Length: 381
Image 1 (cartoon, one colour):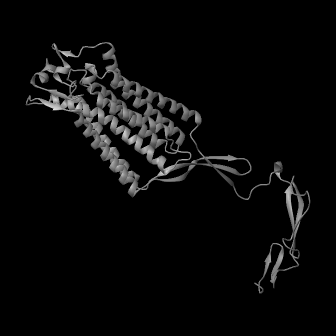
Image 2 (cartoon, rainbow, N blue to C red):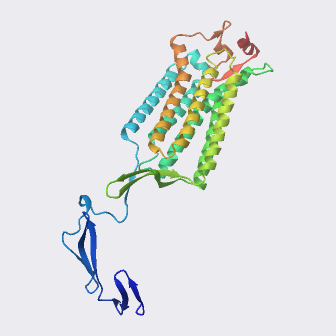
Image 3 (spheres, rainbow, N blue to C red):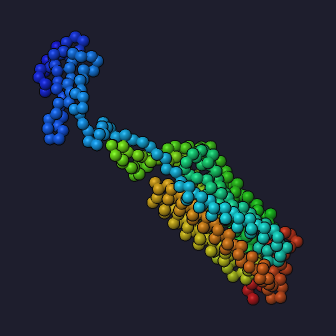
């Protein structure tokens, strides 16, 4: 460096031991109000910085010193209290409705119509509905933990499986009874239906456990690139959310989707095959059909919106939670309102002078169903 000597904007520049050429002084000027104004000096022979500013000479627009870079602040997006409280109240009302239907099942369990409708399985269905409602209370953002991530997935998956597993096992029993081509007496107990539901729940639980072992959830901040606010003086607010991330979640999610889809398809098949069974108290095929239409439509719309609104966390939470509350409530109403009406309106479940309970005796077995050749022919008359 000591051997360098070049021509710069201020003249010839050379270097000596210990620093720059001590003879170079630079005048600092700035155009203000259309005029060239002296604002300071730079002297190489002064320590430590060498700058000498002329007091009051340097002026900035609106008395704000411009930044040499954008000042960035980060703000977490949270669920608005009004939205969360509204959905929580609706979920609470849904749970209250489930409790009322549960009380109805218990109080009128000796009623013939209620007996035929498998009250034990209906109670399991209500348990699944309650788990679906609980999912709404678990917020996907704002101070979430790994336990929160796991709880939200477990509540929804198990709630859906239990609810529709209960519906479809009831319909499977009707299908098995009324498609008995050998016209032999067949008895299917509630314990068998509960075992089927338990197998579905255990299968789903095993998938969730394997998921957390091989690809556990992690809570990480995710910055929303398309959501930024630019404020004055080169200041920018960038928004982020805390999200649950699992590296291999796609594989496990699609495994669960396939299982649930197969269950929906199987339920649709059973509902179609049992559509001609005329024992209203025993056959839920029409209600299941309505529930299927409800779930398929809401699931299709919800999945589409989740892809379109991937970065709109608040809006996505509101829509998906709203669909969950709406769909679960409709499922409860579709299944239980006809039963409540039949009990209080004293609908007679007699076919050709023989009571339905005589054909599908559930009174003594606590919800078991059986049939013989005569009961199989009854719906055809």
